[in-house]
Structures are given as structure tokens and as C-alpha cells.
Length: 357
Ligand code: DAH
Image 1 (tube, rainbow, N blue to C red):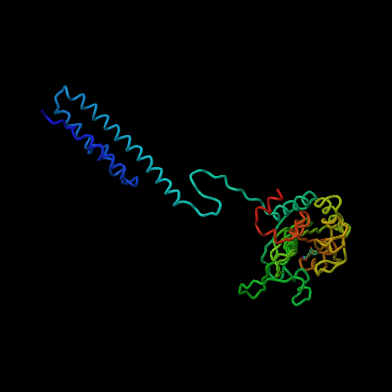
Image 2: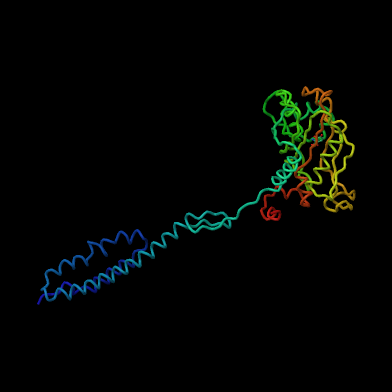
């Protein structure tokens, strides 16, 4: 009687199942594959040896071997799936980015979308109001020479009026004094100079942009803030045109129940000059802490172009006249949305911003 090659089958199967269980990583398991289910497996060797059996024994032995193989293959596939999942989880963990609440995985997590800044939104709304009134919009440089920021605006060196603007000076190693513009008024000079050079008067323009002052930020001041400047140069322009533009703008932007008033003031580049105030939007003119019980809030300055300015840019003051105004965009946003502390505008806290959707 010959000993069946399958006499040790169950021992072999147990050994194979152990090898499968002992593979701890996917790599280890894959390296074992030829020896467990592949050509170099003991099962394949046994398969070949079946040929030596008597034909009447072969069928039975074949079925037995087939069943053993199926069991081993199933155990191998199960282990492989498990190790693949574990290895994927490891990769994900290694690729995880520490973004606070946001975890990057292969599943797409909807990301929170930001919100436009209130100042940018306000600037666009202001531009829209002025555009419907017939103004065009342009901008100007934030770094200016002393000439544009001061001298051409009738503020000579050492003039006491310079004290009104706490200036940041930029040291470029140049003999010329360079400053971060303290207001948008220098844009008036650029516009008038290029209109003269290209012979393209009249001008009806607003110029929004960022300005800088050496101010300590508080509830009503920021060191980097925004203004919008207005300039009209045309024939026969009077103070009544200025007052009309200011009042029309105030109603259009703040609403029918908010009015404007002009109070005598001094600015070197306008004569006469005025401060431009609007009804306090907090108390609607009744008087409150924000407006110091006056019912009015100052928004900016304005006036008729000073002859010295027209002369500095080479415009004939006998033929042309004009007015200018300038006011804070951040202040407008604060007044319109009743924001107690202006610093909230630059905190970049999306929970604050979402309130204005
Ligand atoms: N530039 C002035 C400031 O920042 C505001 C101002 C006053 C602008 C009078 C003007 C003006 O255009 O005519 O304080």
C-alpha cells in the first residue's frame, strides 16, 4: 500500500494558515504570497504529485486538495483586505494636516467659505453711489513724495498744518522726502496734473484707497484706514454744487432720514473749507454718547479748490473752478452698521463678518 501524498495535508494547511496570520504588514503578506497560494506553495507541489496516484484514488484526492486550497485562499484574501485597510489608514494618518478643525482625508469635507471684508464691501457701495451721480472712479499711489502729500496741497515744509497728519516717513535713502500717504487728497494732484498734460478737463472723479497715520488704534481710529476722495473741476462750479453733491450722497447711502450739514473748518487746500457731518445713525439725531449728545457725526472734510492748488498744477483759476471732499470709508462702515469698535473691521473674524451677509 502506498502512502497518500495527502497524508500530511491538514498539517500543511495549518502551517499555511499560521503563516497568513503571522504576516503583520501588507508587505510581509505579499512577500509570502508565492509560498502560500502561488506556484511555490506546498499545495502546488502536492497537486503535481497526484499524478503518481492510481487513477481510482486520484479523483478523491483531487477534491480533498481543492477544498484545502480554497480554505487557504479565502484566509489569504481576508487577511489581505484587512492589512490593505490598515495600511491606508496609516497613510491617511501620516498625511493628516493639522489645520485645527479641518482634517484632510480622502473624503471631501465641505470647507467653510470666507466672507468679503466690510470695508471692501462699503468701498464698492460708495463707488456705486458716486458712479450713479456721474463720477468716474480711479486710484492713486499709497507711497507719495512730500510734494504730492503736502506741498502741492498748499502745505509747505514746517507748516503747522502738517501736525494735523501724523505721518509715517519712508526712508529710501533718497534726498526727496517720501511718506505713506496720510490721506487720499494727493490723488487730486495726480489727476489734475494728468488732465492738464492731456488737455482733458473737466474732471468728475472719486478716488478711494488706503491711507496711513501714526495713530494708536482705538475704537474710532486705525493706523491703516481708507478714505474716498472726490474732485470736481469744471466751469462755473460753486459751493452750492458741493453742498448738493454731499446731501445727495448722504441720502443715497445712509437713507432718507439721514441729512448732512457743513460746518466752517480749515484745510490748506480748500477755501472756503468745511467739515461734513451727518445725522448720527445711532440715535437718529436725538443725541447719544457716540455723537457726544450733538446728534451729528463728522464724516470728512470738503471745500472749494484753493487757488494755490490750482496754480501748483497749472490750471487757470479764471476759467476753471472746483471742489473736493474726502471722508473715511471705515467710518462710513462703522456708522452704517453701528459697529462700536472699529478694530473689529480688521480682526478678520468670520463670525463677525457673517453678521453682514
Ligand atoms: N484730506 C483731508 C483729511 O484727511 C480731508 C479733506 C478735507 C479732503 C478737505 C478734501 C477736502 O478733499 O477738500 O483730513
